[in-house]
Length: 70
Image (cartoon, rainbow, N blue to C red; front, side, top):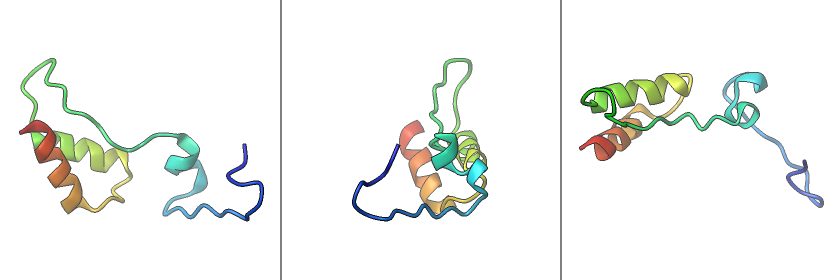
């Protein structure tokens, strides 16, 4: 698979390529389901940050987590 037939493309990652989202095809975001017990935005935030190797802007993840659970 090629990103472009006519341009050079570089992928920049904060982590080793084998752990990057581009390689693992893992978005690094979770969803609050509340299917086993009441969900909590703090748990959702922690899961998202941990799943992203602690690299995302944690203030923005908090906003996202609060919006989805409340």
